[in-house]
Image 1 (tube, one colour):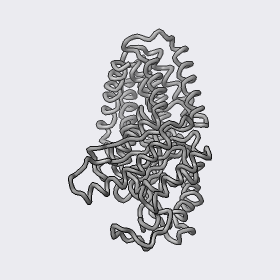
Image 2 (cartoon, one colour):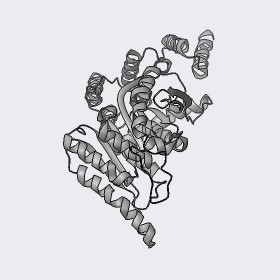
Image 3 (cartoon, rainbow, N blue to C red):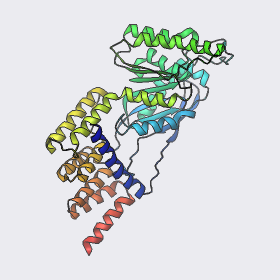
Image 4 (tube, rainbow, N blue to C red):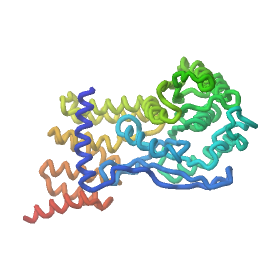
Length: 411
């Protein structure tokens, strides 16, 4: 499977880069600004939104997407979106990212109030976490669902105090998120309240069916008594979470330790490893499709059998998500080009036709079918499909291909 997958990636990169660079498309997409006034919090909350993008520079079908909610968008939105964008071709589903920008971090990310902190940290405004989770549950999620094309499958990511709140949300409001990633959380807060809440939720059985990643930077001893004592104070509750959840069969749990990482630099591998773990089943199903469609080493499936296999795989994927999922447009599109490159035009046509049937509003699917008809030597049909693509997106690359065909037909 490894060789087939490598071949697939190489062919995919070839087709995609030719389109993107040929049309002078930007290869970096960070996101867009949004905001929402919160009646609960009594203030305007800035948001950063990332929407899944076509890698070909063509308008694609407006497919509903799972949503990743993340805290500390001020500092971590760009990192998170780039990690998820990199993973979203084959390892995780293309997802909308909602980054919540901080206004008062200590207030919003602490679930309980403390009068003082031994480290000297200012906690005078602490304890607004419940109100902040009310904002997320009752205002933010409904707003995102109304404004963007979402599915009800949600993941929540938080780091440090945000890790404290993300784990607290999992334990106290389990219906809100399917998955939670807790990154190096402040587990010492309020005499270990996070561990207490997780223990209560595990005992009540409310974590069943959830995905939970608990990632920490457990640094090696430094030799400094004060520093090492602080490290130990965090290590104890972290290990308590491990003891509580590691043997449970009713949830998908990963405890990940980065002994050489710092509190800050563990964010990148923590998000990467966490998302890969939570969606390992998705990646396995994607690889099944690639393996079934492999024209390089020869598949024993007929084209009809291949289409049936893809539909069956996505039926299993739908069962995991809890709603119907159509075959991913980008993936099927790339498999169609892969088959074309290998000379299997029948398979290429069938894959492109699947996309046309599933995404009739997409310019991309008609452009691809036009490319198929060019390869098949049917200029009349190619012209028809390029025109259909241009009705949906006045794309320079598609326009150029159409004009080339029209000019050649007049010679």
